[in-house]
Each structure stands twice: as structure tokens, then as C-alpha cells.
Image (cartoon, rainbow, N blue to C red; front, side, top):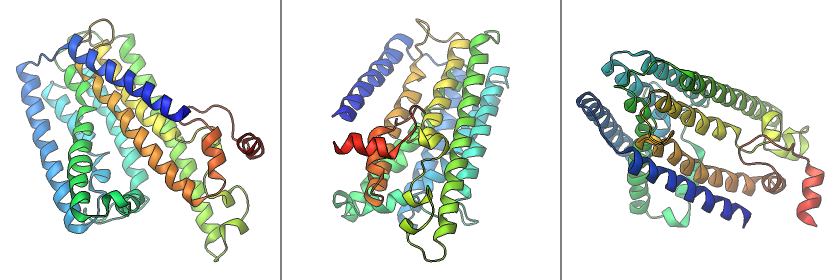
Length: 325
């Protein structure tokens, strides 16, 4: 019930702020911005077609997952070039490139990329989702692949780069808001890096301990839990998701520094980082449900540890006593 209320409140806030962004900010694009947007839309449409056609042909629905960290780099450098490499655009593109390299590296070491780009490890969640009764029919899954994986996610990835488009024509001097955008975005990238490293090392060690044919319950703690409760993960279930959302919310601050907002914060591109919140709400719910079905202790961790913000440290005894009373 508490989780449902939280989702409802979050949804109301996201939708309200997004609507205000369009209503108050308006969409007034210059010729340069319009021409740039056309180029971005062509790239986006090409990616949609690729993800759907190749995903269906090779039965690997991680095509968009592989492009998720690459496309924003392309989008922001196109914007930067079309905008004359202004300092604000240049910094925006560099930060996105740092973000993209980190995420691409993390996905690559999981086996996602091959020389034949359409091959590689598929995200395990797609295989599990395909077995769901609602997606058991091939036509239904293909429709989901087209509308959500290929179209919606591609549009979202393009959208989160649009704050860069919004600041293209600005001649506002570099200021404190720009510095804040840089500081916050790099901090969130660092958070993602640390969280991913802790998760990677935990699961690599767990695999090493299980390599001799041992059962999960026979290996040493904390690896015998099956899921990570060390480092940042002891205080938050999805610190990497917090970092991801934080990066793009921070980059939106460049629109404030560029002076293209009204009433302090409203520009039509605000909807993009906000709608990213919806994606991670769904993704976190799916991931938690899968982990909960695999590991008995996870229900205690899930019920007592913060979703995103690293708060109170997980304690199994206290969590069990609280949940089982």
C-alpha cells in the first residue's frame, strides 16, 4: 500500500511538472534548432527500425539496451556541432560522453557487445518477461517490442538530450547554475560508477565461490544471500538508478543557466528527465520481483531498505523481526 501511494504521488508530480513545462515554457524553436531536431529524429527513427527488425529477427531484444549509452553521445555532439561548439554545449556533450563510456563499459563486461553488433548477451529480464502469460503470444510480444522497447525507449533517449537543444541559441554567460549542473552530474556519474563496481565485484565473487558446484547456502556470507547487501547496496536497493536519474536531472539545470526557462525552472524539455523516473519505477519493480522469487531473504531487504537514497543500513535480524511480527 505504501509503495502504491508513493508511485501515485510521484506520477502526479511528474505529470504536473511536465505539463507546466509545456504550458509555461512553450516550444519556440529557431531555424537552427529545427534543423538540428530533424537530424536527431532521423537518427532516432533509424534506431527504432533497427531495434525492432533486428530484435525480432535474431530474438535478442537488447538491441536498444546496447544503444542506450551510445545514442546520447551522438545526439549531444550533433547538437554541439550544429550550435557552433559553444562552451555550454561542449561541456554538456563531454559530460554525456563520460556518462556513456561508463555505462557502455559496464554493459560490455557483461558480454552484451560482440563484433556482430546484434549478437551478445541479452538482458535477462527480457527472457523472463517473454515467459509472462501476458506476453506468451508471439504477436503480443512483437507489439510490445515495437511500441515499448523500440519506439518508446528510443524516443525517451532522444528526449533526455533535448535540454542541450534548448540551450543552443543562448548567449547567456557561463554562471553558477552551469557550475551546479556540472558538479551534480559528475557526482551522480561517480555514484553510478561506485555502485556498479560494488555490484560487479560482489557477483563475480559469488560466481567464483559457486564454481566448484557448491550450493548458494553453502558459501560464505554475505554471498550466500544471493543478492548484494554490501557497500552502498546495504543502504539502497537501486543506487545506480538514483545516479542515472540524477545525471539527467542535473543536466537539465543547464537550461536554467542558459536563461531559457520561465518562472525559474520551466522549459518544455523538463518532461524528459522526469519521464525517466517512470521508466525506472517499472524497471525497479520488475527487477525486485525477479530477485524476490529467487532469494528467500530478499523480501526482508526489499521491505526495509530505501529504493534509491542510501539511508539506514540493512540489518537482517531487525528486518525479519519487524516483518514477521
